[in-house]
Length: 72
Image (cartoon, rainbow, N blue to C red; front, top):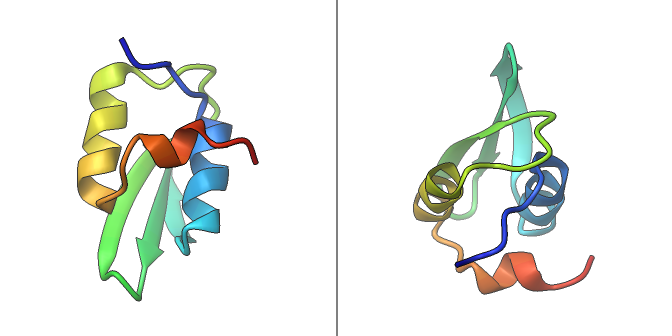
């Protein structure tokens, strides 16, 4: 079973991959990558992002789970 990541870790990795915060509403942050033309929404201020939500973020961004395992 993959490791559960915090929202702050996911946001740091996405920002390093070229995603920029474009807005948000309530407890969610909207990120966009103009180079890849991809948009994703990440729940903000969560200690652990649920596994299904994490896989949805991977699907939306086109990244592999191995990118999130690297230390920042």
